[in-house]
Amino acid sequence: MVHALEVFEIRQHVGKYLPRRSLLASLRVSRSWHDSLLAQLWSEVDLRPNPNDRKVVAKRSKAKRALRLPSVEQVQEHAHLVRKLSIHDFLSLPYSIIDFTGLLELDIDAEEEFTRLGQGHPAKHNIHMERIILNNPQLEVIRIRSPYCYLVEPFWKACHDQALDLEFLSIYDTFIPPEAAPWFWKTVAQCKAVELNDVGTVDLWSMSSPPDFSKIQRISFKSMDSITPADTWKTMALCTNATSIEWQGYPEMRKFNPTRFFIPGTMRNVRQLKLDIRITDHSLSVLLDFMEPLTSLDIEEMQLERSGCISLRRHFPTLEHLNIRECPYANSPFIQEVLSSCPSLKSLMADSLHARDTFNGRPWVCIELEKWHVSVDIRSRHGLKRNDHQAIFARLGQLQKLKVLDLSLHTQPYYNEGERSIELKLPLGLSALSGLERLRELRLGKTRQWLETRDVLWMVNQWPLLKLVQGNLHNKSEINGELKAVLRQHKVEWAEEERRKWW
Image 1 (cartoon, rainbow, N blue to C red):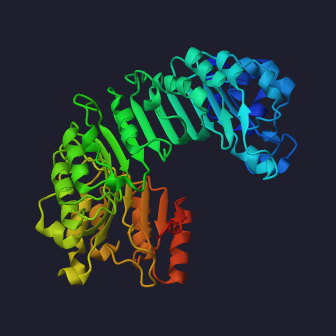
Image 2: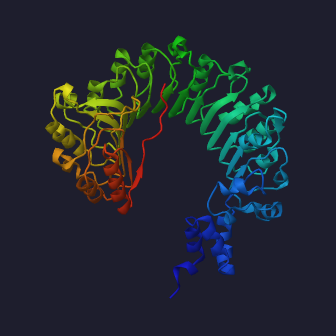
Image 3: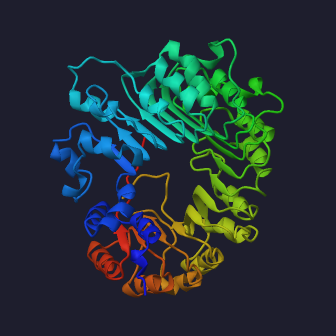
């Protein structure tokens, strides 16, 4: 009988899941093993700036010997096997003469290079990487992060001429010289997904004729201060077939009215919208009315008020992902309305839901919900008693597809008394959550909890997929430590409160 690992194709498949140290050991088993696993070893190459700097290498993994950088000769010999290449050193790069002919992903990151060089080095450099682009017309992904570097005209011309089927282009903290801007925008137009973050470039609308952006399906603009809000909006409007749009930045956006730049027939295919811009509630309302029913909407910290909420209700039947944290009008009654009106909802991020509104509202219909990021407030000032936990647990118990149950409060800083929220105790009705068999993460933050050993044991037994518990388990530190030990015995990770920024 032939052992499975004696089959060439099976060894290749197994090699995809081996850590690097195990992969290196497997290469020494035999010539046949070497031949079947060599391509997997060289599929990803990360060329760090200093090959002799063991401190830099050691930070990447505990397997120090397995992470030694290859020599130029080794890379030259196996360059045809490399599918993903990460480059960091632009100033003295001996690898630039190597012909990589099978690349699918190219990652250019010069940030560490300039951190290493220090302030005494010249501030800006032109970088020439066009040879790699010209040798790899099949490139699918290009990621660039190069502060204080100029990606010059030949590079972007090569991208336009050769990288015709780019799936994803990500540019961060990069300057595009004016002479290279036309080729840059033409390259953007060839991509299916584009992410531009803090890119300094000549405005598209200063050119004679903007390229056709109809190929773009997903586009993201973040902190694009070099382009005015109006021109950013008009650029996104050119993406007539885009299904996902992300727009972040511009502190002065309250003065910007996007309704002035609506173009009939554009952006009708958008189904996923993420906004982090300071526009008025009226502008947000018009924007939501302008679009077809959305499946994903992220408007955290937006000026969502009465008219915006009315427009948002039109999208309730189709919404699958919704983030309305820190929106003024997205209060507890509105969250209850979302839960009782969005049958397709899979992820919800909001502030605090009062148990009183749940009792007085309609039954929840979001039985498809997988990620819950809402605190449940059951304080007595809302007219409820501790025994009323059971009704809240009964509602949560209906969400049997939950994978993440996050009850921590997002909007308040830490207070010594802790955040008042629902308590996860068996006498209060925790057993109603026995149906959450798919639960993987339980996040409690700094909520006030008084869990006992039996409560924790019940969780690990009833939720077999549970892998992470985050936050406070008991207000007394000594008991909190005992409960963490119980979790570790059942191979469940415990983490402290997530770090948050407060203003």
